Amino acid sequence: MASKADVVLGLQWGDEGKGRIVDLYAEQYDVVARFGGGDNAGHSIVVGDRELALRIVPSGALHADVELFVGGGAVVNLQTLVEELDALAAIGVDTTRLKISDRAHVVFPHHMERDAAGERERSAAIGTTGRGIGPAYVDRVARTGLRFADLLRAGTPDVATANAMERLAPHVVDGVAFIHEKLAQNKRVLLEGAQGTLLDVGYGTYPYVTSSHTIAGGACTGLGIGPSAIGRVIGVLKAYSTRVGAGPLPSELHDERGARLRDQGGEYGTVTGRPRRCGWLDAVAARYAVALNGLTSAVITKLDVLSGFERVEIVTGYRLNGKAVAFGHAGEPGLEIETEEHEGWSEPIGDCRRIAGLPAAARSYVTRIGELLGVPVELVSVGRERTQLAR
Image (tube, rainbow, N blue to C red; front, side, top):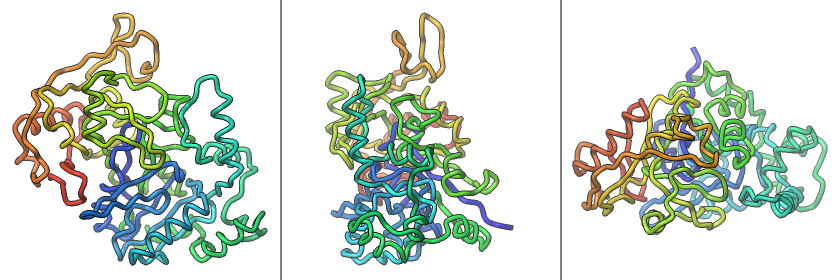
């Protein structure tokens, strides 16, 4: 019987810290596969005093025995990928392990130009990264895009693309055959999501979303596997809420507490450097994400950022015109939120390695999150470095 693939994805609006969680779990797997998105998503891994930011290459890159795969659901900027491979090779990483699906689409300069022009022309900007991801997906759906397979068979449209493809051609494989072969060989496969559940093009806060499916179902369509091939679904949840760009963020704090979360959490975009909007943890949104993904467990990140707050809050309900409403109403005018207040903690927690060893108030906060999500919390990050994790 073939093995099942496990999924790690974000439960919020991205920036949950998925990269370092994938990096942690990767040592238990043979293959780490990226199933969607492009170089608009930056995944950061901190090892000692070195920080590695990956945009396309899966976050298992630092594990020498793990195969790396970019699936057909991704859109790839060739130059970004070449630069990323060069940077990895410069620190001694064997980049020959990377394989790219022949069905992955290519992002060209004209996609970035269209992206910027589209943002300028909108009456209300969405806040895209300008990396051309949306236009590349538009061309894919319109059946006018170019895949790696097309470039290999029919040639390249310009010198820059030809040079990049000369470098990348040895990495291109039949993507469907590759992933099914690994599963049939009972290889342990970890599927990595990009962005977050609430940015999903179909089920996020539309139109303020990304251009691909970021939920667990997107792992199936992005890699060409059936739902019966999915095993565990692990959701990564920041201990508070953040969002880059426009769109609903019901728990947003417009006061010094929001600024403090941003400063203490270093909440600036990995790719764009833009400041992130910050607010309390939104359990209404998180429960919605749990349902969409069929979550089996959760990981809480950046709990350490809350150290020093006298009180912390969790959004537990939405009300509109006096009636309780679900997450689908998140962007409607007049929405009111209900919160519950929790005692904060002042102790630094960066050295904690057991959830049971957290300060009582922090432990209570983690327990409450698990209750609200309805799934077990299996891991809590207590600092930026890859070893700062409590189990």
